[in-house]
Length: 407
Ligand code: SAH
Ligand code: SF4
Image 1 (cartoon, protein in one colour):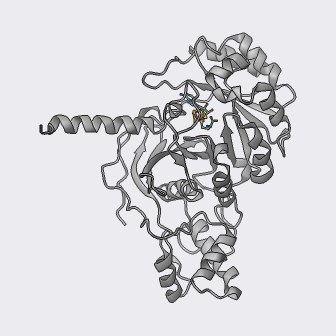
Image 2 (cartoon, rainbow, N blue to C red; image 1 turned 180 degrees about the vertical axis):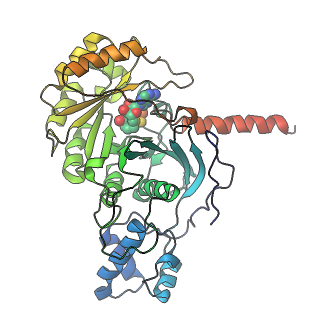
Image 3 (cartoon, helix red, strand yellow; image 1 turned 180 degrees about the horizontal axis):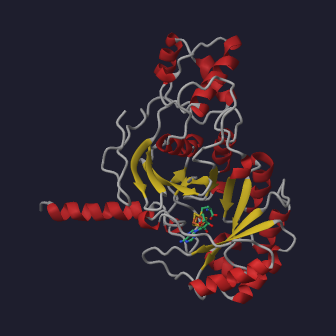
């Protein structure tokens, strides 16, 4: 398989994409154990062997990070050949990998069409920090919602990602970071979580994860499976703009950490910034938060608040925020607004963010300002996909200039 070179700081990868998976075979990635057993039954694996084979596949896919059946050395060669004839476990096509001067990485993936559609592209971002590394994963191509400060919100929804496509973002990130164990890892051995580069997952890329609940749930349950990728559910955070009816199920069925994109403390303003508020207002949202299964002081909800100059950043807003969240085990994350071309807002002044943070701090919430990362590669919140689209538009213009169209 061709490999992309390590790419120079802040530049796009040259056009040597990783090979696309053959689109004609069903993938085993993203199947749960019952589906894997069914797939094996379909190629004639006898029932008494299925459990053992499923465990072997699971280990190769999610502990060892295998992307080719030939790696599965404890599975008989004949069976490997049959598996490879019927299924694929290929990684998706990686169009580019960008590495920021601060170590942040951004990948652009292309997924094949599902049904009559066309190929789609999404972005995934890796943010290394002291002692941990967070992968920001996308759940949809575009978004049906139209939050006014978010660039993804200006792009229409193309489609939901499948469980495989959500999970693949984690698998490729681990491949590229060298995060799968090398050498012998006996089946059944404890999976070392020490020294891993991807320690945390946030569903904060493109899309509204609770509008793609089934696929997100499936992918996250596989990611947190103790015999596989083994990411702790306390290190997986799902961010929602406020799809209230799905919040309870998120806690009960995924039991991951929850983040809420609050961004305003009054309904009239939130109706404008986060239009889903017209359907489920602040009271309904906070009631759902209070009832979030598994909520306690060790498992708090994160409230995200984007700092928009002169819009939602007054000290009265800060005080109201603290009042609203009273009684909810909460963390507050102030996000400096990341502007995009044509965006109707400016980021609040730094002094204002600090003054706002001070009010929040005094109420007992610690270190709430999120530092923007990967700005040189446009990897910040709300900027995903758009820059790649823009870059391609620029390339098109350059091409057209170099070779003017006939006629
Ligand atoms: N759809 C989900 C998750 C994806 S957005 C949600 O809305 O929660 C991830 C976070 O980035 C959200 O809190 C979102 O409000 C924030 N965000 C979007 N655009 C932004 C921008 N331009 N600057 C800063 N934060 C932004
Ligand atoms: Fe969609 Fe979230 Fe962006 Fe709103 S902030 S448009 S919900 S991705």
